[in-house]
Image 1 (spheres, rainbow, N blue to C red):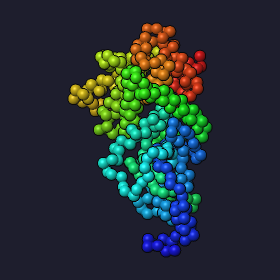
Image 2 (image 1 turned 90 degrees about the vertical axis):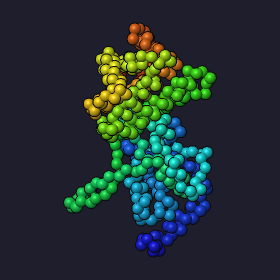
Image 3 (image 1 turned 180 degrees about the vertical axis):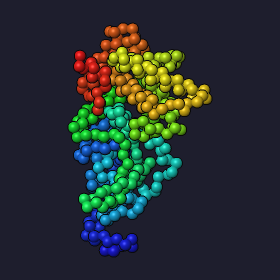
Image 4 (image 1 turned 30 degrees about the horizontal axis):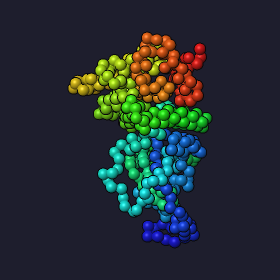
Length: 387
């Protein structure tokens, strides 16, 4: 059956597709979040109400309008779907969201920072590895009915494939970052994400309590997570940040750590946050190193606020700050749940008491890393495990 666009469509396939479309029950609306990492085919990991999985051929077709899914090639505006096979997506069903009525999304309603709307599943994946993972695009999908790109885009880059007879074929592929998941780490990532999501859930329960401190801790967690995600989405590879974003990335990391470690007094925060961040590590050498990294970050924040020249910052320093800030978030989650609402003050006590350090920091961290280690076991946990 020839069509106006000059392509031949198999009539039987088109009729069958149209029939399935007409007879299908109404689907639920789903969020599909495209990530810039790589995961093995068949991966399926639950992270709260989301599922991390790689797209199959059939699932890739769901990102195409129904009639285009049976054609040999899609129109130019939908070519990106062809590069999404095997791509990692975080997916969730949103049963209460109304189905599409045919109108496009209002431009002003499209989120400028879509990752902030999905911070809860993204945070465990960010903390899993030293490699940065980012959310590239947000699709709203009604399987078998429609799919819309709601925020951002699918980044593609040109590449060349060399055939066996020496020919070079140009093609486009999905641009990816450095975050990778191997087959042997699927179960480990699942255990880690389940553990971290459970800790997040325990903190978020405070939003429903009458206790003011519990509600404050809940807000601080969410704000810290949002700032870490903002910084991650301005970091390319592991250590490249555009010069005009460097100060902002520093501010995001400092704000995240301060949100987690400040107390109600709100005084002398740079010293307190530096010492409390360091107290979350389990060896003297790392405590000193963390204190120095946080201290330099506060110094750069002050230079920026006072109008001084901040162009001396380098990529490696930003990478160290990112890793420290991510470590603070993970260790804060692990220790705040068993310790309670006054973790910052309890961390102060660990500076003077070995007993307090063992109860507040050492024991919870050892238990967590034994049960749900991230991709690379932290060096202080490795050292203590060897003793």
